[in-house]
Length: 285
Ligand SMILES: [Zn+2]
Image (cartoon, rainbow, N blue to C red; front, top):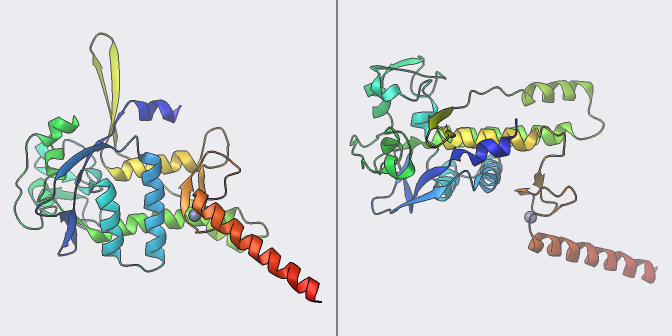
């Protein structure tokens, strides 16, 4: 299976508002924010790196609100409303079945009305009925992209941190001289099983036509991450850590070591100065 072709047939339309705010632990669009549409699939590699670097900031104990606001301001909300239900048509059912318990309730089954209400922290469920159409998505996305829709900061922070920690475990695993116990522990932590919300739509226009739809940025991130870290052709992962600043970046060139020219130049200047200094010391001796 060639993932490139799946991405090429995937509807990447996603909404980001020009500004977000925190309300009672929820991230939601700011009152005067303007709506913008972009192609999340086209930006998936940058988004993945951004997510990993946000995870890195969370691991360094930066404020979860600040980090999540930063991510969401760049890429829009994750879409937890549509990420959790087992069935994308949940809106039409009385009861919603969730893939995971522990987010909105300890049960995997919740009344749909109550489930949706969890994402409108101010009580108003006002939606703009044209957004789903604009993005070529199911009607339920009128809710996800509504100005009154909010998502708990904690869920997004937990997801970003977990993604980064998984990446770090992979790095650790690649190190030589691991003790047997450490290798066993890392192997266990690298085990990752998630169900992704990807629906398929085949229709006949002038020929058979297929399109894929992701339920959330969570699915897009995890899918992009798994494809990058576990390439089918056994090539090294294009996800790399910059030798100077420590940020994670995407580059398919195996020899790449720096996230930017700025970092490469900076690193080379430091190395040059150090070499110069030790040469001078030798001369003094
Ligand atoms: Zn760098």
